[in-house]
Length: 155
Ligand SMILES: Nc1ncnc2c1ncn2[C@@H]1O[C@H](COP(=O)(O)OP(=O)(O)O)[C@@H](O)[C@H]1O
Ligand SMILES: [Mg+2]
Image (tube, rainbow, N blue to C red; front, side, top):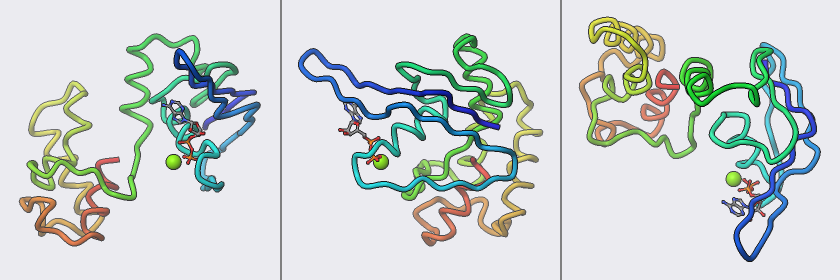
């Protein structure tokens, strides 16, 4: 599903260079459920940003679903991120001004899709997490666990 080959990440500013990742080799297969552990500053966020296609490695290669990311243009990468990758954050990051169903629809706005189809997919996803009775609520009117249950279908 995701493969990293000798990935390295260096953050460079004019005055300092920080080596965040060196020689990372990971192969995540379909159905696996890995976790990444390490002390603060050890490179966990950097790794997840790279695996989530939010950032690019300084060196080394990555494949998602057998496709080498380095060979991809921006548009292909954006499509891959939209269709295959989702993040669930510890602090939810829902949009407070949008209702539950509108939050779940946000990633679908970046796809070619009718309003009706988008709404249908979002409502079906919310039904799966047991939130059909809260689709018109705003995040501020939900419990923490309910907010996280909105973040899953959005992802
Ligand atoms: N944008 C950045 N610019 C410069 N250095 C960074 C940046 N982001 C992270 N770092 C450095 O890279 C290292 C790894 O950071 P990070 O991936 O955020 O660690 P973790 O998530 O494991 O706490 C740290 O030493 C940090 O100082
Ligand atoms: Mg972190």
